[in-house]
Image (cartoon, rainbow, N blue to C red):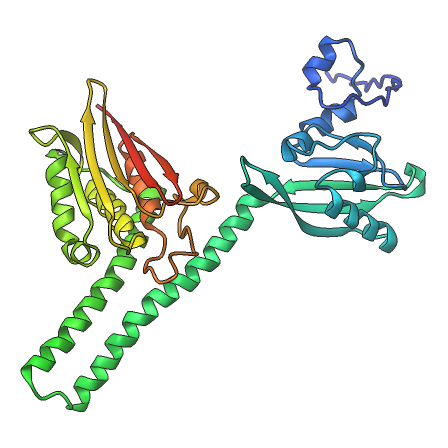
Length: 378
């Protein structure tokens, strides 16, 4: 037996096109305000959407626009070009209307992030003209691409830094190899000096490669912790001994504050060696001037262990603080031009700390102090 299926279509329902600005759909429904289906759908998309008429006046802006431009919220029924931060987008609309074709470009908008600090955001804006049947004007789709732009810039910086870091030791090693092959070095002392230089720079290359492999393991989740109970003070002392050459060159005042027995911690000693090595080495390298006071301390409570590495050096600029734990980021370029490294150290620190279920905080004031605080649950 077959069953007949009848399609039933309901008559179209007239929908109001009134627009209510910057209220969530739920709040509008609770207030008894009619909400067009199309407007509800536009409010759900993550990209910002604007519609402007032929004179450049905003006739619609979805809710995502308020999230994309929190300090310069777009006002409806106002000219877009007269609204702060929207000048570049308004310029794209003019181009699209003049060319009568779709225009796509990246625009940058600066936001005040506190004090005199200005945070720059990158947006990908697509503008297309609308035909006369739809009243003319144009629609604008805006997407925040700041993270992508920052990642791309960091990638370029890393390629430059890594190429320089690897080229220098490779060139030196290659030069010494050619010298040795030429037979110009006769004495055992000169030969040993050549071998020492080659060994030093080969270790430098190995350090760069090891850092890359470590961050790759930590970020991919392939790093398996080999937990053991160890003395944190002993771990720090081993790191300081390993950095003896750098410490002798910088001549800092180093203070250790730990419980009498050294403070016990359960974790992967290999990664904690790397954590303290990177934090201490970073403080020493970033502060070549004499007078640095470096303090490493540990406090234990019933629930957590708080480990701190602090110094009274040059500090980290406020605009760099949000990015210091990102891969390949090298902060304060104005005072670290000659400092060797690819910018992986603090990224390794953060991920190694988090792999232990711990957190890390950074507090810094330029010219006064830099303080890294790690809280490890017990």
